[in-house]
Length: 255
Image 1: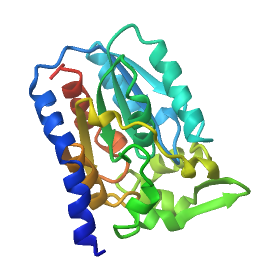
Image 2: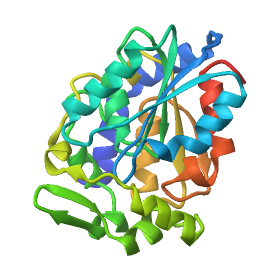
Image 3: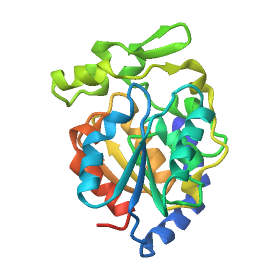
Image 4: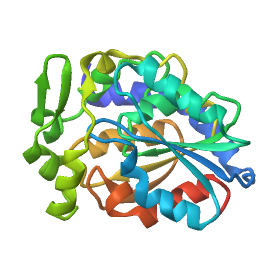
């Protein structure tokens, strides 16, 4: 099967879900004041600091999950614990790998909407690795170094392919605090796809060298997400926090 046929089949399979999403998105959104933010690989919860400050300035309650990056199940559990502490309706936001987590944990009844920032957005039970292989491999993948079962990006790949639009000094600070991830994390598969039943928003990073931008566009279109394109590296949440904050506010009915 060639790539065009493959994409056609996948697009068709998500068509019904996309129609439902457009209908849901057309409904007035309730104003939500709680936001839970989940980080992905090569990072920790501090990567949301710029966005958190802006959400707090707007009167929202923001919580960053410290993703253990060990297994998908453990990462989802950490997110569920954060959701349990929220006092009402909540927007759930995921960056990068954390798209897997919000796709799974987003079925929680407290979650009113989902926001994906240059993030994975698998369907239930889908092999994300197989899906990603249908698109050219992004450069960052070659920069992963392993110590036993734990991996992280080397400094050159981090600065060039992960945080390419940040000042080098700032990128080096982020490199220093990246959390190594366990190999087992990459084998996890979602059992739910919250985006099939809840309104979703997606920020595509057009200069992304960590996830292929065309893969991001495909996933956003398949889920029927309200989508923006940001001229940014994989770290748009840091290089363009105003834009990402506005997207979250839109999902929270606070625009």
